[in-house]
Image 1 (cartoon, rainbow, N blue to C red):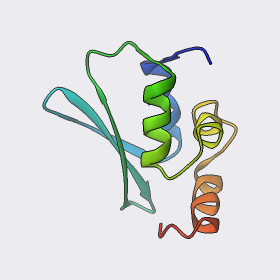
Image 2 (tube, rainbow, N blue to C red; image 1 turned 60 degrees about the vertical axis):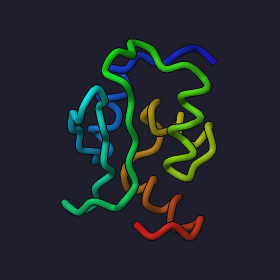
Image 3 (cartoon, rainbow, N blue to C red; image 1 turned 180 degrees about the vertical axis):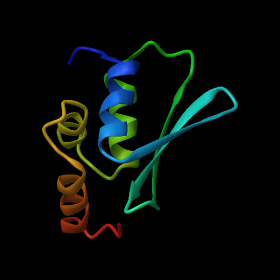
Image 4 (cartoon, one colour; image 1 turned 30 degrees about the vertical axis):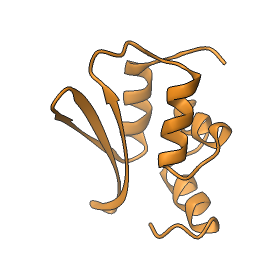
Length: 94
């Protein structure tokens, strides 16, 4: 799997309802639905230019998704409603 550029990740997450916040040396992304935080969040180091397979897997686990499901979020094939439906089908409260 090729690395994902952090700016591509950030754009994709913002389109899906994630809100970003810089805390310390990290960028935190909070998944929001209807303006409310869902309790699901991701983070990355501000020094990262590219995210490699291991880091992508960690982010996927934080979102309670498989790596393939998370990559469909990054590739913009899964929208916010699709994420909510996927998570609810897994029993995650969103």
